Length: 194
Image (tube, rainbow, N blue to C red):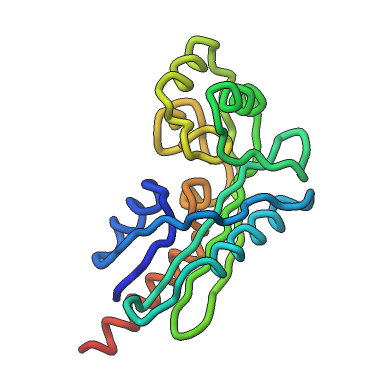
């Protein structure tokens, strides 16, 4: 099964490469990721829908995948923490998240057999009240670059954060139901080849 991941995310690429063998990854450029103030689930759904429209569908791939992840501000369920653009913005985000719980929302769209399969899921993450020295270390490591909310659960932040509810894949960039769907597609594809 030939899969195109339309995303620049190294983490998403690694997740798929662990499960599937024929993955190609291409970044989507110039997708408008701004959204009107709404629930985070609707915001992430709108962004992933724009990515689906932007991707070029062709016969080179059996499956095309687009995804988006947003972190819900722990103090405002309509305010999303996207990818920080600077050390200052990453610091502000990590200070908002430190010592509390927040939701992480992912939306994934999988194109196969001529139609899109869409899923939106959230997970609950708790981040300990780490020291200012740890905050400086997280910022200086640049582990926040390209990460919603300014952190990577599978990276350095994994020492200070834990999944309370939901799927780790949701926090890392894919809905669990989309990964399950891809496994089903792989099985069907393998059966049709034999």
